[in-house]
Length: 88
Image (cartoon, rainbow, N blue to C red; front, top):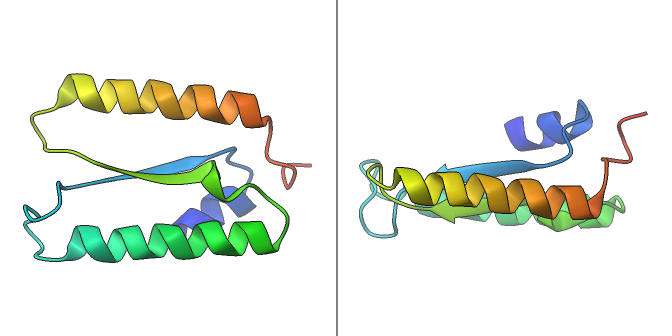
């Protein structure tokens, strides 16, 4: 719901960061989040938007430089895609 709402309200892209597989404090929370991201990607494709405007990354809490690299990667990817066409 939050991913779709962000896109609907004009976000050009959204990314989710979850625990590394097998290390989630919430047991399978990262797996559920991944499935939700995949579902939202499918829905975006169905309405004519690029599904990869929404992505999921997995890392541990001690990986600050990796988090920064993912943020940069996502920003560059979204710039290549251009603005969200729903943002009019």
